[in-house]
Length: 391
Ligand code: ATP
Ligand code: MG
Image (cartoon, rainbow, N blue to C red; front, top):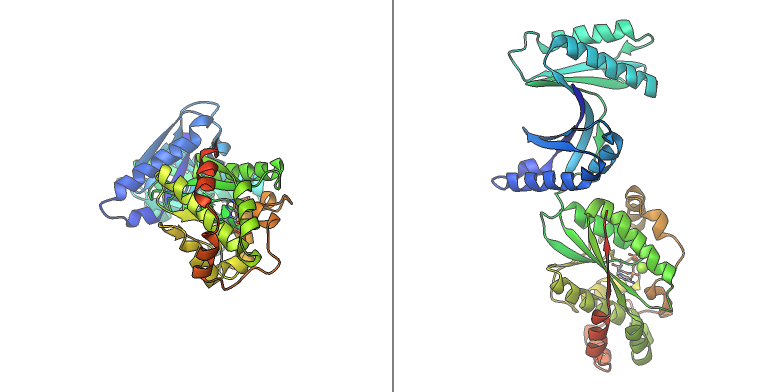
């Protein structure tokens, strides 16, 4: 017998003929996430994945922690895998129940049995009664509650048998890498890390770009973005973070364009540079943390002007979300505390007092034509620093 991890996945099961491709990707991603923590076998069987440790010092808890972050995983359970033998079933159900009662002070329970192996001589209700009775007799203070027990002891009788109780929820979604790659415009704020996470959850690999305006923004502001990318990579795997020097461009916009258009023009140039990085990195779309109406540049008119700067899809997964919803998600994915550190962003350094909320594209284009952005963009792209962030 050994303690293993049962991994459940959801939406992939709906895939028709492509299903094995998605499953293989998921198994591969799980292997990548856990290989550092000990030798194990990762096996797929009947719509589930089992992780079976193969060494003494296997870091079981760390592996659990990593697996629930893998996109595509709906839930995991620590499980005793034992022989399909009634004495073992009873003994290990009792062992797990005693551990749970000791750790969590549970008072009530019930047993549920699934018998996939029809050759096993006992039927499910009989197993439930007998094992339940044995646990009751031997753990003082515990009673049965069939309606809302503190814990359920699950027994699955198959080729082998499986005993488990705890189920830890994952994030679901699609396996990373099953839906191409996109460039995330990653600021140091609350929104963009959440936006990247949401696309990662749908299987999109992330390439990140950050614009910084040294010395108007500090080394620590840059470090904050590296830290955010590091947290994201816990979910999204390896991330190339492109740090684009943006000072010259911002100064050029500042010196030559009308103040109320500064933000929109700056955002358009960001998009153009991000598009080049996308084309150079096999990415097919851009991702931003914009949400409808959140600030002056995120109005319908503003987004129209921003979108018109590029020729690839721009995904804005937060478009319909309220700030409080985004904050909740940022907390859930652990980026919030880093995002609220008070270092300045290049957007906040050069900011108009009264930015336009209804910019007109023709007027914006006219202002842009007064600056020769091409060489500035070229230099910015050429002097971009790429940092490889590993999970
Ligand atoms: P965030 O919380 O993500 O900073 P925000 O609400 O502050 O978003 P803006 O500052 O208007 O919004 O930026 C809108 C989007 O533009 C961001 O979500 C991000 O995708 C991108 N962005 C803004 N500043 C930068 C930057 N310095 N580097 C890279 N992307 C940026
Ligand atoms: Mg911002």
